[in-house]
Image 1 (spheres, helix red, strand yellow):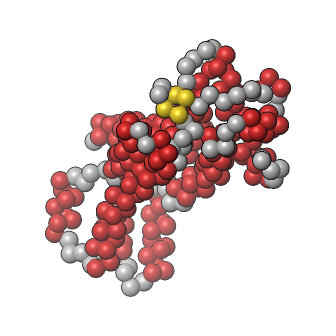
Image 2 (spheres, helix red, strand yellow):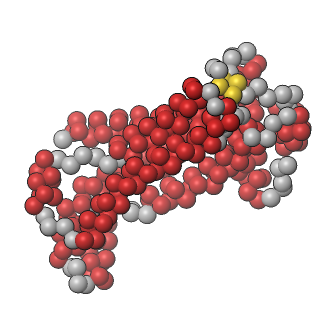
Image 3 (cartoon, helix red, strand yellow):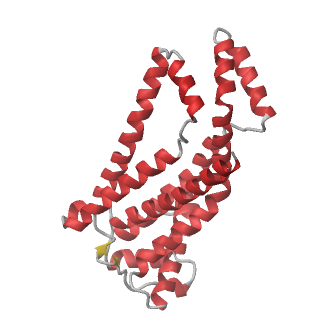
Amino acid sequence: MIENNFFNTFFVIPILNLLVFLYKGFSFLKIPGAFGFAIIGLTIILRLFFHPFFKSQMETAKKMQELKPHLDKLSKKHKNDPKTLQKKQWELFQQHKINPSMGCLFILIQFPIFIALYKSLSFFLINHGKKVVDEINKVVYFSFLKITTIDSWFFGFDLAKSPSQVKIWYYYLIPLITAFLQYWQTNLTQPPLKETDKKIEQKKEKSETEEFQEALNIQIKLIFPLMIGWFSYTLPVGLSLYWNFFTLLSIIYYQKLNKNSYGKN
């Protein structure tokens, strides 16, 4: 049952209505796998909505990467004076018009929408049958959005079931693809060092803290994709479809951004 509370009213129900609208549209056009295409359409709409924040975050990350040598010098120079270090770092950020909090802002903005999307898709996919259809019809904004059934099949996959439930060999490809795409995206977000930078890094003596941080980053790069892959093994395929398509759109944007960046150098 969809309860009437603040989060559902302002996040879950609007996304649910958009998903139903897309589903009805693709069904009206008699397109096979209408619900799958509705999820893809919803992903594109949300990706476009988040693009200004995502673009700002990527530009900030790129500038931070360029300022890293300067930040390292400041850290070394003022390592015994945290207040002066913080002041000098902030002055450097202001000089280059960087707001380090943009990354956190992007996460904070998208977090409630992602939770709402998860709840909407879960309601659509995990809970199945006439009772769910009736519940959805109670919260749609317009009468023409009311549905009579939910066809969750999408090119041989039942979007309402997880690979762990179905246990058919090609369903096991989904968590593998999900983990691979997540690993690919994680690697793209960390631009490779230039040869000169590599030589500097090799010569620089690393503290125990820096070595620990480096080892932690490597573990995160490997563990996070495996964790996402496990989730896609246990959750309905429809949720994996959304996650993978969103990740794929992000990868395309990362590659375009890196290509433009290298072209200018």
